[in-house]
Every structure is written in structure tokens, then in C-alpha cells.
Length: 413
Image (cartoon, rainbow, N blue to C red; front, side, top):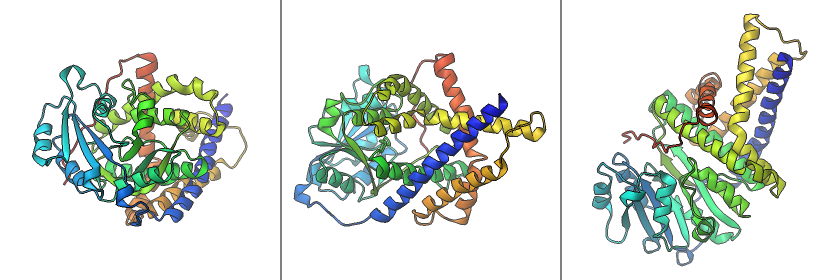
């Protein structure tokens, strides 16, 4: 039985590595094709459509001022842009800061009625959508600082390709040098985007909505019924429905926005617990539908996307347990094979992919980041084991109620 579990764990890990290696090569190819952050304009100003930017806020006084300054500095015709700040039951000075920064006609403050307030990000976005008449809707979290050129490339993609339902940009970690955790999250984010997002776009035109720095067609959004108020991961849930509707989401790395990441483990754990529990909800909601969905390649990717946490969790935890037990001499694996060399080879592939992905971002392939990337498997990656286990316990054993947990903000210059 132990031998069977060991072989299964090794097979799962290598399946993930081989598939990720395919995505890595395709993602690197996408990097060479795009040479992101190009300043070339492909659509003239008079052809750019009107855009409404939605910024949901719940007690965001620490960050909203810098976010609005960044949004007001976007390189986009001002007369074709409206910023809607959705004050979702804030009890701090969020509304005061919005009023002080918003000039006439540039920023509109929407106060969610008390009866509808503080029900989560999706509910706040749906309230804001009621006030949108523009053909395109952009979403930015309250802690985001988009670069001046962030919005225009996203809009241009939708203007030039009618098959696209949405376009998503590249996010960077604003507080990446704060401590060891934020450095890990910076490496994780760069790897995720240049390997998974870029690779999946090249392989099968599949990209997941990231929750911020994206633009979506209002008509599509309305036809889908807006965001799902019951979902803890409204971005992932909307991604599935966009593809079910026959539309596509494109990854546009020329659009760059900077965001905060958790600076402490408790904040990180609460945020990621919400993500995993959100995926639990999506698996229950969509798994049966996707088994019958067409085209098959998109259905497979959506299923892999929904179950990735569990595949990773099972493979790593079984491998870790058997490794420790074997090292202690308590059990013995009798399956012949060069498993030590295979493990070292897998680790080298993992590290090489991360380092090359880091090299796509100026200054990120530093000796320190390479050392940190090498240590992530033994440290940061292992944190996902209790995280996923806790989320599974919460949903399927303890049946704890689902509540939106706002991510704590930090003072970042």
C-alpha cells in the first residue's frame, strides 16, 4: 500500500512538472514575442471607448489616496474615463479621502446603502455596476497603484479583438522588500504570471482573471449576471463563466499595476484560506458541468485550475510523509528506481523555471532571489499543506459558515 501511494505521489508531481514545463517554455516564448511594456499605441485616442473603473473599498484609508493618485495619472483620455469608488460600509476615513482627492467629474463616490453594505467584494462590484453605462469596465483593488500605461493596453486588446471578453494585466508586489514573506510572494507572483498565465494563453488561450487590473466588456458582464455574491473568489468564478459563454480572457503583460501583499503569516493565512475555500465552492458548483463541457481542452484546463490546490496538496503531503518515514527507517520503500536523482532533477527544474521567470523582470534575478527561490520548496511551499487541510476541514467536516474576510492593509510608502 505504501509503495502504491509513493508511486502515485511521484507520478502526480511529475505530471505537474512536465505540464508546467510545457507552460514554462510557451510562457518564455510569449515573453520574447511581447517584450512587454512596449509604448507603441495601436489605437488612436478618438477610437478608444469610454471606460468605467470600479474600485471597491471597505475601510481602505491606509491605501486609497495613493490608489486614486495613480488612477488619476493614467495615460487615457480623461473625457473617456470615469472612476467609481464604491464605499462599502467603511467606518474609517475612506470616504473623506476620496472626496478630498476627487476633482469634479473625475472621481465619483458611491456609498453602498447600509442594507447592502459589507457583504463582500462581489456584492460591492455589483452595486457599482448599476451605475455603469460605459461599454468597458475596469476593476482595481483599493491597494493598487497602476502604472500610467496600465489601462490603455488592456483596452486596445478588446478594441482590436472582438472575440475577447476580458483582458488582464501584470501585477507586481509593492512591498516585496518588506520581509521574507513578501519576498517569497513576489517570487511566487512573477512565476505564476510568466509561467501559468503566459503559458496557458499560448497553449489554449486560457487565462484566469486576477481580481484586479483587468478590463471586461460590460455587455458580457451583464449577460452573465455580474459577479457571484456568494463566491469568496469572485474573479475565479467569473473566469469559469466567461469561458463557458464561449469568450476568452487574454494576458497582457504590458499593463502593470503594483499591489500590496500580506506582511504577516496570519494575514497571509486568512487571505489564502479564503482563496482555497472559494475554490471548494467552485468545485462543487462547476465540476459536474465541466466534465461535459466543450471544447475539451478548455474544460480540462478549467478542471485542473479548480483542483490544483488538491492535486498539489495530495502529492506533496504524501511525498513528505513517506520521505520522513523512510529517512527515519520506520518504513522501507521497495519500488526500484533512481528516486533520489529524480527528486533532485525535479527540484532543479522547479528552480530553473523560477529563475528564468524572475529574469523577465528587471533586477529580480538577483543572487538573493535565486537563493530564496531555492529555499521556497522547503519553506513557503510547505505552508500550503496546513492551509489546504484547514480549508478542507472548514468546508467539508466542520461546515463553518462562509464569510468574506477583508485582507488587512499595511502602510507602504
